[in-house]
Structure formats: structure tokens, C-alpha cells
Length: 356
Image 1 (cartoon, rainbow, N blue to C red):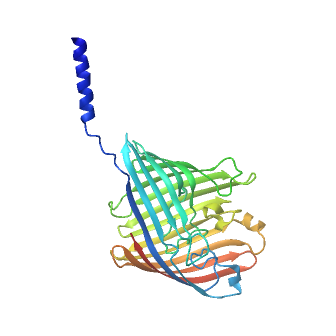
Image 2: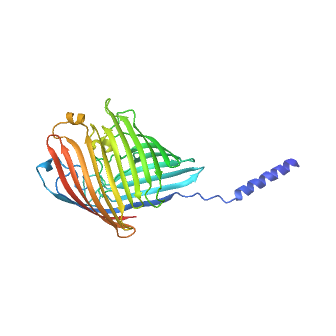
Image 3: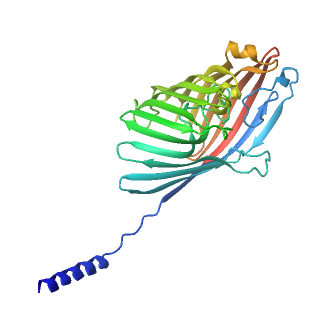
């Protein structure tokens, strides 16, 4: 009797479980983003790139040929993917591309900018892997030209890497490993770390106070080493006016947009800018940046090699609609070459951009 009763109870429980409606599996949430960008520019002298220059060519010392450009290659398309959180683990993915690969203007091929997976755990710990922005020198100056700052005082780039992050109140502790470019024959990656503090001193809707200290170290071909040490800051002086910048020291760090983009050499640099929100539609900015080699590196350079690079910018942006803006930026660029002198240029840039 007891055996029959037990079998009946078991069958009832099994039938009840099968009758329960199976929960629907939540699909990942996809969010596309990006912008259409049209840039027109005038350059008073020969530059390393007409669309996104960072260096004035040494030919400009004697040959002052001016030039102009019109491009849409900085248009960008990205995708955020957010998977359902399971057992307290969140999973996010990001893919972003632009059209800066190759030389063709009318049929520019796609270039991958970002492609990574981010795992978030309880307690503020996360792991990110893939092609990401470097931890070192993550803050960049406000400019219409995305190359301004690269090789001119604002290092930091995107590489394939693994990052570990831990939030602790206002502080963020990060560390990771980077696959060095051209390092297929190297055994070890470059190592990077950053500690930063963020505080919304004027409320969540305004730019926060950010103070950061970051560094990178690795071995390159042979026994040569590469390092990059950076101090970054964003200081809101009032809700609509902020001071941002960075100071750094670097060696053999051209792959990270330091050392004027050169593979060999030791030196340092900085950038500093001020941003002013004149109204809900108008923003103004100005800044200066410089990257240079130290005296010992300059002594070993061949004649005609670049030894210092600097840029000064002044810009204004007007928000036409919630998604569309037009902006104008003027800049003075100067590159110094060993025993040749200084090559300089004026650049004017007009941009229209629609975000989505």
C-alpha cells in the first residue's frame, strides 16, 4: 500500500512539473549606434595625412604647397549586445568599425576599431577581452580631427588585450595584458595598469572630476623595452567649464601613439585643454599639445629626423538638432626636424555630424 502511494505521488509530481509552462529564453538586447560624419579641411602646407594629420612634412620648410580635403571616412558604425544576466554574471559585447582602412575615398574598406566581450560579476569585478581601448592614457582632447593628439601629446590606442577591473566606491583599479603590434616572435605581452578616481562634483548630469595614474611596460625586439607612464585629469571648475589634460613619459612607445609615433626613442609630452558649454547648443574649446624626444635621443637621431611635434587648437560646435551638429576648428601645427628647422602649417576644418 505504501509502495503504491509513493508511486502515485511521484507520478503526480512528475505530471505537475511537465505541465508547468517553460520560461521563455530572453534574447540578447541589440543596440546600434554611430554617426555619419562629413569633414572639409584646408591645409596651408604639406601634412602626413590630408584628412587626419598629426605631423607637418619636412618638405613644407621649403615647399609651401597648400591643399584641401573632403571625406566621410570617419563615419562610424557600432553595436552593443547585452545578454541576460544569469547567476549574477552579466555579459556584454561591443563591435565598432569605421572606413579608415585602405587608400580609396569613394570605396573605402571597413576597419575594425573595437571587438570585445565584457563579463561583469558581483562586487564590481569585471573581465574584458578582445580589441579594446588601452588602459593607459584613456582621456583624449576635444577635437574634430580624430588623429589630433596621436603623436602630438595624447598617447593611448586600441589593441587586442585582456583587462581586469575592480570598482571600489569612487575608485577604479584596472590591470591587463596587451598583445604588442609586430610581436609575433615575442613571448610576453606588454603589461598595463591604471588607478583612477571619479566624483560627480556638480551632479550626475555634468562632467565628473577624474584623476588617473596609468602605466605600461613591455619588451620589444631583442632586449629593448617599452614603457609609458601617464597622469590624466579632468577638473570641472564650474558646471559648464572644465579643464582636462595629461602628462606622460615614454620610451619606444610609437605603437601607443607616444614618442611622435616613432618606434625608437625616449621622451615625454602633454596636452591640456579647456571646454566651455556656452549654452545647450554651443560648445567652445581650446588646447595645446606637445610630444618631444629628450636630449640623449635627439643626439642619436639622424639629420632630418623629427624631434618635436606640437599643435594648438581652437574650436566651436553648434547643436542644430538633438542628433545633428556642425563645428569649426582651427589649428596651428609645428614639427621640428634635426638640423632642418621647423615646418609649420595652419589648418581649418568644418564638420557636419549626425549621430544615431
